[in-house]
Image (cartoon, rainbow, N blue to C red; front, top):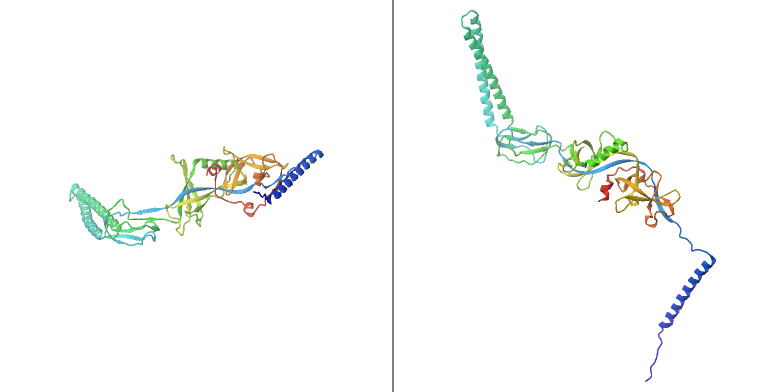
Length: 411
């Protein structure tokens, strides 16, 4: 039996590829040997190009973002000062009421009767006083001619004084009856928004009861109470005392942001700082007074407040992307020196201002901080520099909410 051998068409092509690769490799090796034989070293890579920002001091308003709640400056709990049956409720729940507006009416009949009785008692006491005065005057005249004894005259004078005292007591009783009658009309002590009513007509109420009939709250202006750690407060006071931070205006401006992130249309003013530190939280309470004409801030609402802490005239701001931290948390940045060489600087970072860091040490005005190309270089490298263009947002000082650097770094 004859066997037929057929050559594969792929073998010549593979053989040709192998020969070509070997020839190319040999040419490269020969070229390298030739270059070494001629004494020429391989061409060095050109210096990397990085983008830098030249630091310039600028005027910066420093701020702190704190959390707190809105509270009503005045809250009036409406309670009855006499007992009786509620006859009418004369307000709409949730509406705005004015000071002095009638809210409830208690059945006045018993108190009208008490007033009438007190008025009658007073009239009787006045009549008795008039008779006692006449008798005392007659006794005094008769004593002059010794028609009566001195004892009779003294008794008549004592009766007159007793009648005067009874008139005074009757007048006080009448005044009390009138006050109680006036209490049957319960009015709003302040202007504000009224809450729901806890009673309805026909309900029996008592004087000084623990349950309020309703409440009236003043909404404009409204208080915003926030807390700040005592450590931050001490640092702020130290910066102001050293002149690093200047107070701007008589009262610090406060911007208020609602729970949904929207900003309240009216800015408030810091009213006062607490005079003691909470032993449990180590915080101090700050209070701001915020205009609230539209009533959008409701008492008890959670808010974020951005407070102006002061102005720094020589602030140095470095983009956050230019700052790195080692495992110990120390901040550093790469700077290009006058010789075009990269240096690593350890920084003292104060706080975050928007997307930048406020640097208090390690850098100076005029330093060129690398902002782009950080992954291509390291300390000691020679680099080519391109200066970043300063946009309008960086040219003007921004008043952005800020927090201490150590607090931001742990977020």
